[in-house]
Every structure is written in C-alpha cells, then in structure tokens.
Amino acid sequence: MEKILAEVSVPAIGKSYDVFLPGSISVSQAVQMLNNVFAGLNDEYFRDSSQMMLCDKDNGVIYNPEDLIEETRIMNGSKLLLI
Image (cartoon, rainbow, N blue to C red):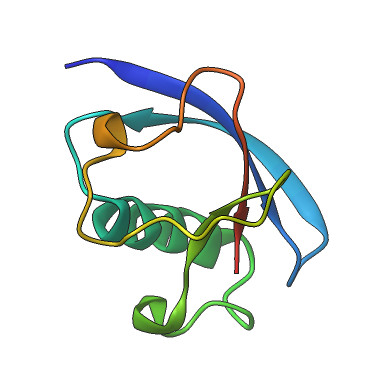
C-alpha cells in the first residue's frame, strides 16, 4: 500500500499537520480518518465528517469523495485543506 505524505491545514483550528494518507482509500475515508484524528485533539470543532471536504490549498479544487486518493492529484508534498 503506497502512502502519500501531505500537509493538511485545518482552518477551523488554525493548524496544519503533516500526515500520511494511504493511496488505496477514498477521499471520503481519508476525511473520516483525519476527522477522527483531529477530533481527539480538538473535539469542539469536529463533530460531523459528512459535512467536511478535502480540497487543494493552492487552487481550491475540491476532491470527489468517491475517488481513491491515488486517483486524484494528491501526491507527496501536496498541501490540502480540510474544511
């Protein structure tokens, strides 16, 4: 399983994290995984991952929740927003 190292910024808490994303999971699964991790750090901001999106920080492209991470343009060094 290939993992991709990306920087994920979370505007709701004003922080960024470097995370490894498995290439074989869907974008929606990645959002849920990230939500679960960040919920442990800041539970008042993360309650419903079904309303969250993952998008490219540089150009604002919102990734399709059904696409696999490896099918998107997400690659090592990508900067993402979890909104």
